[in-house]
Image (tube, rainbow, N blue to C red; front, side):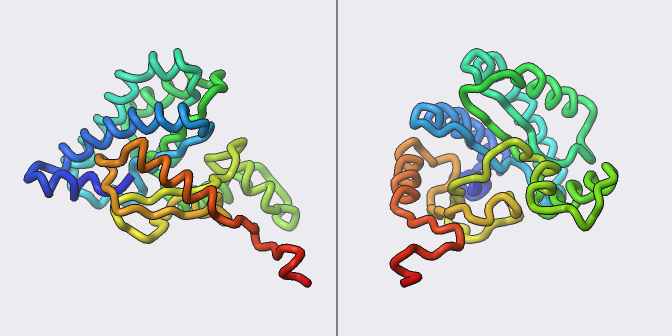
Length: 224
């Protein structure tokens, strides 16, 4: 969800204002995604690299997550939405950890829509943490395969993403779902996140539906 800061700058407002508008977009897109038949949605909210940002901005981002949960938890639960916060818990305050535990506990039995918020998340960090958990569990290292590693990722039990949308004109992965996105389709748009609408989501879905997904395999006619 990129472009909050640039959106705010273009309006001569502080970056925090852009993040606040970004949360409004989150609310709309979660509803739109569910309405369009998407069952799993993962939003990249705060990365492990974002700790280098000004402390005031980090504090504001943490506050926005807590406010989103406080304002939307009842509605999310009522609409049978399961919320998972993926990412490292290291460095997070006790009050934020309680918020994360609450939203995950309250919605853990919901099955209609799966909303994953990547917070304090980095793809490389996730893989390192998974490897450490595998070692701590006493697995025979020679027996570890892709399925084993996947079970120890933050996204265990979730399907791999079919497509990933990157907003604001950026053309890079930025450490997002590095393992899981091996065969995801990438869709890039110049739209800044606060301006992202249902129409933009529909266009992304339409583009995805034109992609020829091969998963590394050749078609029969290409082999021949």
